Every structure is written in structure tokens, then in C-alpha cells.
Image (cartoon, rainbow, N blue to C red; front, top):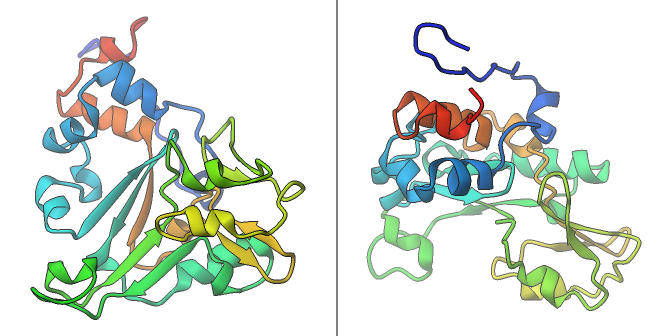
Length: 238
């Protein structure tokens, strides 16, 4: 408890590679957005709670930044920082498959060569030649999960990520076809679906900070610091 302000200050956690990959034990999206603040993601952006990570109204509107919500993390990707090195793909497959195999990586780097008005494809509207970092959106109503004929995709109880039970998976590829971004891939070696588990290795290994996994606990502290929410709202016993 801060005696001067009468506010409880969240403890800072060391930013190690292990800590970045593990699921946090602090706040969840529901606690911060729905329960504690009640302003939603748009309100957090407008209030400046995400500016620390480069997420402001201008960068979202320009298409430079993309934000995806998971129960334990906010995943932020920045087109302007991506150099197209594909290290995220290599490190993702190495961490999850034990080998470098970019075709089975859970994150994708797409070259955005079509630019300017009138160009084909959704990426052309931003009038740039930047790369696009694409990853699993961890959809709440996930099409991959709904269309799996053997119910091999489920929500991890700790992280909320939609993950594959390889013991059940039959490698049919329907999850790949059902996903609007075709993110799940079939590993040709084991014949099973590979899917993002929100481990954060891609963010840890990105040399330019183009991918960030932000804890909701850190967002909660920013919301307090920016005056978007009072401490007592998030800490009723404080």
C-alpha cells in the first residue's frame, strides 16, 4: 500500500525469457476490462493505457498496429518494426516442435508488396511495403475448434489459449480450412495439427520488438496511473 496516495501498487516482475513465456498469475482480461474498468479495449486505447506499447488511436487507424485479446495477454504486432527476418517463425517451431520448420510455425510473416490505392489484397490500403505479422487470434468462438470432428481443440484452463490435443487429433486439416487466416497447419512429420499456444516465444525472440505479449496486470497498472480507473475498483480490499 502506498501511504501517500492510499493506493496499492502492483509489484514489478523481472522481464526474463521464462517469465515472458509463462502464463501470468495476475489479472485476466475479464477482470481488467469487464470487471475492473468496464470501458473495453477502445476505452483503454482512447485513455492512453496502451500508449506505453505504442497502441494509440492513430497507429490503429493507420493499420500499423494490430491488437488481439487473449484471457491472459494482449498480443500487439507492429508492421513498422517488422523487418521480415522470420526469426519468430524459426524460434516458434524450434520451441514447439524441437526443430526449425517454418511451414509449421504458429506465427506467419507475410511480405506486403502490394501497396497503394487500387492494389489487390487487404494489405494494399496502407500505402507501404511493410511486412505483416500474422498469428493466431485465439478467437473466443474459434472456428477451428467448432469444426474439429474429433473435438481435439480446446481452451487451456490456465491461459485460455485454444490448443490441440495431439492424442485426439487425426490430422484431417479441417481446422486449417475453417480458420479465416488458415493459421493451424498439419505437421507432415507427425501428421497432427500445430496451433499457437500463446507461449510468447515469438515475442521474446523478435529482435525489433514487432511482437509484444502484454500482461493484463501491466495494463491494469497503466489504467491506474492514467486515471482511467481508481485503485479501489481493481482492489476492492485495498
